[in-house]
Length: 161
Image (tube, rainbow, N blue to C red):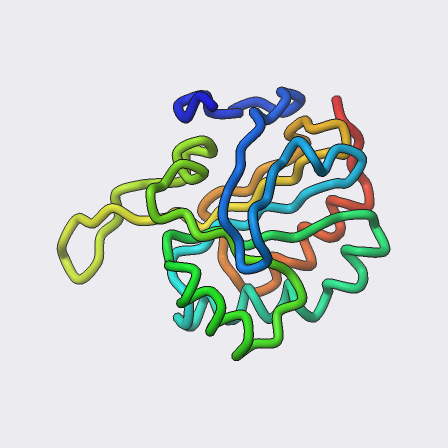
């Protein structure tokens, strides 16, 4: 896998990747025929990330009905993800990306200001990948509250360019 090949334009095929999740390894290539929603978030058990995860959880049946699989992605460990998933009753898996391979693929690692210091972190972002494997929509620097509904609405309308 080429980790610096950022899918930066709609309609490009997303390079295949394999990542560890709370449910075992995820391979993008094995999900052709299914839309994939990858949402990147900064950290388990923080207010915004909890809100976003719960809203994706609450809309999960509708995402399934629309033919999509949801995966959350952060740099947290599988142990942290497992606790977060259990605590919130998340029906979807979380990708542990401690080495930032998937984050770099989607160019979501950014410098942020935290308490007056520059720190490297994940920019809250979501990517909608079509059943054919192409990037159909991306959202970057979003606010957590209400975002899951926005993604669901886009999923219901999308087609690969």
